[in-house]
Image (cartoon, rainbow, N blue to C red):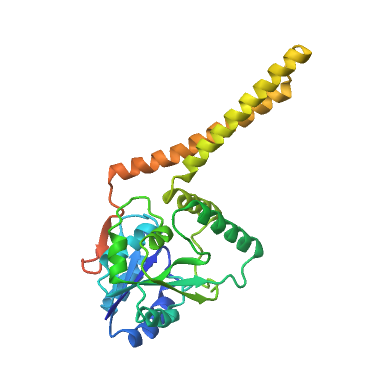
Length: 316
């Protein structure tokens, strides 16, 4: 059995020494033949320099350097495409995904599972964030066509069959949580306690989390479009009902001057609703636009098998 470990890296220079030590402690007992594929996603710090040094000192540590920051989804895909193992694990470089859990995950693969997913408990997390996350997943599972589990991220172990199935999905707008669930196969779950980040800074801002949530809603269903149809029908029925009420009132009590508040509320409400529905349509149209261009998911500028550019010489 050959084990591949894919690690996306973006500005993780402070985390890499601890990551390397942890992997060298965990992986040798699990598999005599293993490789670690570290994907530099256009880092602006010394991440690439450290990856070069790690690869030179130990050939089992391979690296890919993307030409720019393509995002974590593209970095994971790049690592999966270059992974040669019978089993492939994905984990983060910041050690919030504890490598020690890989032993339990490999044991479950031996029992016949094709995916073993690590599920993070929310111990020690702020109550507001926990409540928001649980509400989001409840909403998502009512909307999307696949089941998403709260606390489950990208930390998982896959068989070669599951990896090949995942790589066969060539869509450009990738939402890995949904893709992992969509391919199916027998899946086991391993729980682990939330691990606080000790080095570096989180790359997830509130804006990026919101955008990621929107991607999840739109990537696996067309129900927002169906809801737009229902909402439009409801508004049309309400408008006709209101018009009928005005006609009946005019016939019974005579005409009266229309109210300013009623007109303004109608204009603002319906105008905002139209903009919202146009935004939903625009999101789907934009995704179709990106799919039709067929651009590659990422571009690789350097790998551990190519010669890294030498540092320029400076004359004294």
